[in-house]
Image 1 (cartoon, rainbow, N blue to C red):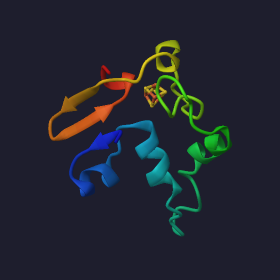
Image 2: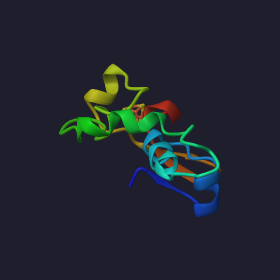
Image 3: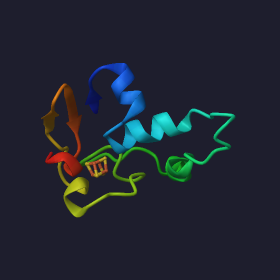
Image 4: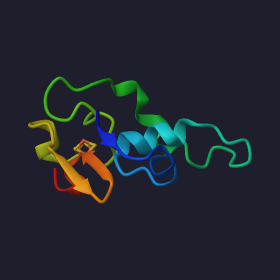
Length: 86
Ligand code: SF4
């Protein structure tokens, strides 16, 4: 689990990069793929150490490759990512 919260809020404003990836994977025929940026990272797989998304994350930092980030709370949202304190 990388992000918890109310589904409508997560879909409207995903915080975790992987949530953003999932939401952007939804092809909106009116959007013509403008949010497909994260799909270019899909081939890299899952990291065995640190954050599992570190091989595909455009925001990856050195600490992401070493330790899994802790969950941080932002209102009703819970996110496991160093971008939010980790
Ligand atoms: S912890 Fe690092 S690699 Fe993982 S999603 Fe956050 S920024 Fe990206």
